[in-house]
Length: 234
Image 1 (cartoon, rainbow, N blue to C red):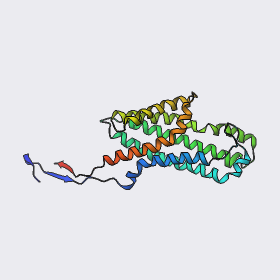
Image 2 (spheres, rainbow, N blue to C red):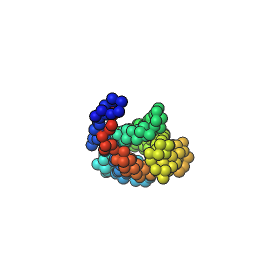
Image 3 (cartoon, helix red, strand yellow):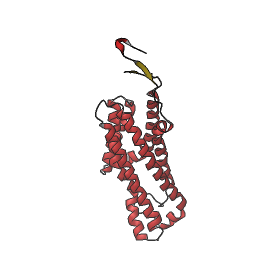
Image 4 (spheres, rainbow, N blue to C red):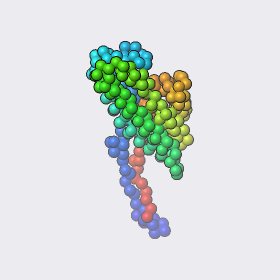
């Protein structure tokens, strides 16, 4: 139609999100469930302390140990998708230059790198030292394996703080969620530096945070899904 001033106005249909885009936020929940699964399924030691892994325990629980590693692999893949969802959400509230969205995205990539090295230590125990019945190597690897999750700490701390600050600054996430998220990031940084109880808190609450974040982000995405045609003036 012709508008005042001789301009033409017409409506472009809104582009709906496809199935994969709608799934993006829920990848965090998948990662959270996998984190619980890898911990519950892993059987390398009869007591919870560094250097206590034994060949007998690992061999007797070989199937569950393989399943534990599979959970880590799926978690890493899911977090790569989740990182994109976080970046998209935070970027939607940034007026010009991307700041918190890129920082959070980079943080989650570091987390995935930490998970990748956890997979490496697990294979070193299961398919390396235990398979060769090399008890000396097994004990050495067990010490590193026990603290393997700490490799995720720097990424988690960065991702939590950037997600919390970015979500709060643009009012994209509720304050009751962003404030604890920032606090978890600070605790994660302290824990990675060896100051308790930050690392333990982050380790235990990570799956709950991922599941909660997925639900909140999915609702936020649904609330901002374009459903009306877009008016364009040419």
